[in-house]
Image (cartoon, rainbow, N blue to C red; front, side, top):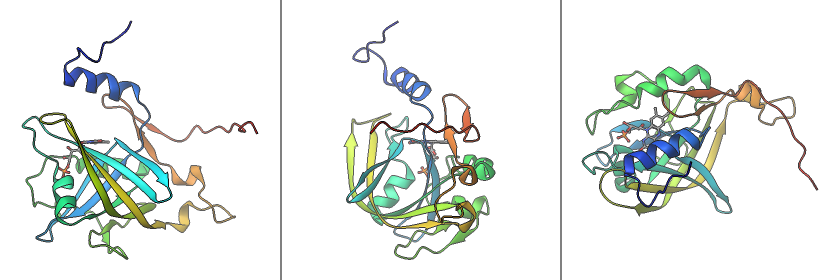
Length: 202
Ligand SMILES: Cc1cc2nc3c(=O)[nH]c(=O)nc-3n(C[C@H](O)[C@H](O)[C@H](O)COP(=O)(O)O)c2cc1C
C-alpha cells in the first residue's frame, strides 16, 4: 500500500502521521498571557532539536476554524514557556488539560494543578513534574494556513529542573524512575516500563 500525500486531505494525512510516528514524547507546556493568565496544555508534536543552542520545539496545530492554540497566542504575547515532562502518575491530569477551555481560563486553576514559580521566566511550572525546561522563545515558524496548519514554536532552554527522585546513585537520570509516557495513535499511550539497551557501534 502506498499513500500519496500530495493528494490526501489534511485530516487523513494527520491521522496516518499520528498513528505511525510513535511513540511521541509529550511536552506539557505552561505559558502566560499578557494579562497574566496561566495556561497548560499537552503537545506531542514535540522534540529536542539542537544542543548548541539547546533548543526544543512544540507545534500548535490551528483548529477547525484556523485559530491558533492559546499556548501559541500566549507565547506570542509573553515569549517564554515551560516544557514539563509527563510521568505515568500524571497521565489523567495531563489529559484533562487538553480540554478546549475559553482563552484566559487557566487549566492550573480549573483542574487545581499545583505550580512552582520558575527561576527565569514568568510562566510557572508543574510542581509534580519530574523534569521541567524553562525556555525563552527563539522563533515561531508558521507552516501552512487555516485548519491543521501549524505554529512551530522554537524555544531556547534556559535551565532544567530535575527531581532528585528520578536520579540514580551517580546523579544521572534513571529511565525507570522517570517513568515517562509516550503518545501513540487513537487513544493509545505507551509507558516506558519495558526498557532494553543496545551498544552503539564505534
Ligand atoms: C497527549 C496529547 C498530545 C497533544 N499534542 C498536540 C500537538 O502536538 N499539537 C496540538 O496542536 N495539539 C495537541 N494536543 C491537543 C491540545 O492539547 C489541545 O488542543 C489543547 O486544548 C490546546 O490547549 P491551548 O489552546 O490552551 O494551547 C494534544 C493533546 C493530548 C492529550
